[in-house]
Amino acid sequence: MIQAKINIDYLAKLANLALTPKEKEQLKTDMPHILRFIEIVKHIKTQGVAPTFQTISIQNVSQKDRRRASLPRRKALANAAKKNSKYFISRPVF
Amino acid sequence: MKNLCRLSLLEAINLVKKGQATPEDFWQSCWQSQQKKDGKIHAFLTLNEKGEKDLARKSLGQEPLAGMPFAVKDNFSTRGLQTTAGSRILANYVPPYTATVIRRLQKAGGIIFGKTNCDAFAFGASGENSGFGPTRNPHDLARVPGGSSSGSAAAVASHQVIFALGSDTGGSIRQPAAFCGVVGLKPTYGRCSRWGLIAMGSSFDAPGPITKTVADAALVLSLMAGKDRHDATSSGKMVANYREGLAKGVKNLKIGLVREFFRPELQGEIGNAVQRAARQLEQAGANLVEISLPHLDEALAVYYVLVPAEISSNMARYDGVRFGYQSKHGKTALAASAYSRGEVFELEVKRRILMGSYILSAGYFDAYYLQASRVRTLIINEFRRLFGKVDLILGPTTPTTAFKLGEKTADPVAMYLSDIFTVPANVAGLPAISLPFGKDKNNLPIGIQLIGNYFQEETMLQAAYLLEKANGN
Image (cartoon, rainbow over all chains, first blue to last red; front, top):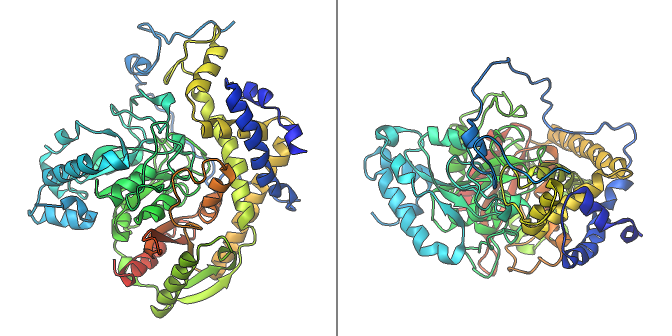
């Protein structure tokens, strides 16, 4: 039943991930197995329970606005595969 | 002086402070050890060849870490030193800044020796998911060192460095520490800054030390912990001098033994080690209390819902444009990014991104993500209730000792189950420590674990220190 719900191509599109046919086959086997394993969380009564998004109750962390030097452009570009002196270069968006 | 690399951090510092050895002597000893051993173990991905320059600082010998070389898991950013996170997508990445916890250790006189191998982006429990080949367990080269801080634990266990840093999202410090017979400490979430740690599960990740002794872990934690303005989730609570109280003992402490930890999958020798440790604590004046953690299985499921969800979000930044590998294929930016990710991300990385995408997708978000976040609250409440009755929880670190390379790679769920005893502390954000406690019939190290209440690392370290001494270490 779970297997029918998983559409690897759709998920790969959501995740922007190109997969090989071999990987798709492997993941089609693995993912239902993992899903069966995590299903147990669905069977626990949680009515009226607030979700936890962080564990140590730190709230409203802020700091003063202060102007600081940013990362120099040269350093920010240092790891880019393609660049000119000012910008990252990516392939066309459209 | 021979074999300096085999000393504990505190022994090493004492030797330097007494003038009987220099930081250079330790650097050389570790370097020779690494050159001799690491061909077989593969703990290191990059050595810090410029590190020797830092040894020139005159005051080094008087600083808290006295110039000691330490290894850093390769998912911590280090300025000017390659940082791959164990993934081929970052094969040539050199960060422009250094993680806060490392900067603090450097300021205290520690010197980065090298960057250690790990499961790609810290996704794994065996070290086998590294994009650069697995690390091997120094106690038996046919076995895994555990993961994901595989290289850090193996490097310390094989005396290639004096101590190391790891990161723990579901057991990634404690589990390899247990498999390699060293000490691994996961602090309370927020006790140590995550700034500069390449994100995996942002509400779970915790940097911490891997050391040869409990006292070493106490010293390193004292130096790396504390508030950081770059990490809004780091805590402003005062950092104790964890070393000072180590010898206080455990008199009148209440130690909880979780009934659910003693399950059929637990290797008998590990169960016996936990019972032996419990008796030693009792003899030292602690009171044992049997307790129950009914949501133990659910904690692992919660982890494998929430962490992939956080992963799929965190991994979106790898688009091949600003940093990392860029594919030659794909005519548009989006297609090029999909190819870049697809061509070099390791299989486990892809698996977790897809799981996270599934969990966060329309129609499943409430059923999985939100529901797991609510179960997380129940688990936290369960721990809070338990810590109303006990001061510490004692248990195994792992269900078995180190398994063989390849034994679990075909079955991801079997691999995930290796973390059953370590994950609950991460789900709740609690501190925990693994320390070596004897060996099994194959002469493989056994690790036992102490879990503490929030920010009670001091109490946890006191009990661990006592057990270490009682066990003859």
